[in-house]
Image (tube, rainbow over the protein chains, first blue to last red):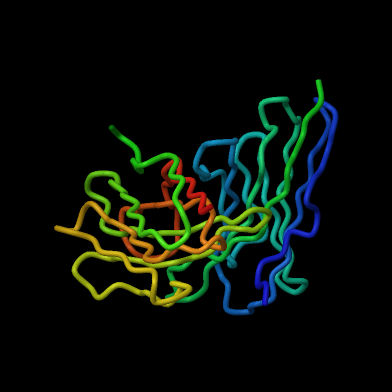
Length: 112
Length: 114
C-alpha cells in the first residue's frame, strides 16, 4: 500500500521554464511534507518542506504547494536550470511518527 | 568529515553470505535511520535509533536483518544469509533530534547479491 505516490516517473522541461512535480498521499495523519533531491551515486539532499498548517512555502526558485483537501502537494521550480536535473522524492511524516515515508521519485531532466 | 559516512560504498556478495554495512552519522546527531532503495522503488524505511531508547525495528523485512548502534554513534546493519532480493542501495541518515524534519543522508552502500 503506497501511502505517498509520485505518478510521473519522469519529466522533461526546457531551461528557463517552470518544472512542476506532483505528489499525492493517502494517509490523513501526515502533517509534514518534504522534498528531497538526489543526484546519481549521491544520497538524497533536503530541498524544501511544508507543514500542514500552511498551503505554500517558498525558498528562492523552489515553491511547495499543499492542498490538504485533495491530499496533494506539488513542487514548482522557476526558472528551471540544467543543474536541477535529478530525481526528486516527495516524503511525508505524521503526528508523533518520525518515520519519513517516501514516494518512488520523479526524474527531472532540464534541457539547455 | 562533516557529513554522514557509509562504508563500503559497493559490496558484491554471493547468495547465502553475511554482510555488514557501516554508518557514521554527523557528530551530535542523536537520531539515526536506515533506509533502502531497491531498483525503481522509493526509499523504504528499515530501522530507527534515537538516543538510548529502544530502536524501532518495524521496517526490517525479515529476521535476517539486524542493526545496532554502539555508543550512540556508529551503526552497523547486518544482513545474514543474503538473498538476491536484498540487492539495493542501503542509505543511512541522521538528524539532530527525533521528530519530523530534515534528515541528512549518506551516499549509500550499494549491495549486489549474486
